[in-house]
Length: 252
Ligand code: NAP
Image (cartoon, rainbow, N blue to C red; front, side):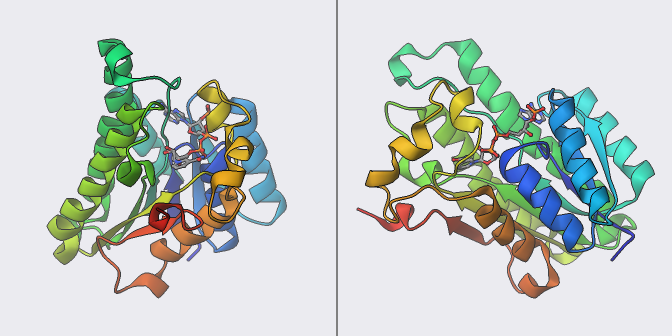
């Protein structure tokens, strides 16, 4: 597997970083994409190299088509793509739809939706057996917010993840006979920096008493599901969206 590249968007922190580290342990050469936090990306690469793996940190904002194109071209120079983990995503400050600005909505769609679509497009171009590729896997990172709606928090974020669910199902069918499996995970409340970036640094633990398992999940618990969906062990799963939410999405 040492010639196979796993490209993780947003691989510098949180779920993406855990996926990058686990991917390297599974034998992938890992592209650790990041937006701004070069030091965090470098730490992930160093940890992979210390464990005997191969990784490269590549900056690139998935909210920019030009930067996505440059990211995939640089990734091609590192090795042949086998797995895309479409993980980069953002939240915003908690609020109600009645107060949302066009700027807020457009940022959300641009990064979470258009970014994921364009990364998937670039992956399909490289993986499709109809285009000379040797197949592979795309694992999208959705959220249980897609089911729950995140009222009075970020309905826009939840809707962006609803789009990811639909992308997963539609693209899975579209490229199934081109050697590409498309799946997704729907994490619940996971202990990462994303809550602080939305102005709620203690959110994951504040919510713990109301969560079915009375605790948030870890990035590693989500990464394990992503790695399984990416692997040949999941060879009969396509268009599958796996809840990794500690039972949250089935709780009343
Ligand atoms: P996080 O801890 O905030 O990390 C975000 C990662 O994405 C960082 O590596 C960041 O790079 C990168 N990133 C942000 N904007 C980017 C952009 N425009 N272009 C490229 N990279 C970008 O987030 P997380 O909690 O791990 O979330 C990862 C994914 O899981 C997201 O799609 C999120 O919606 C989803 N999710 C998270 C939770 C949760 O509770 N944590 C629940 C459900 C779903 P820098 O380090 O350079 O900033």
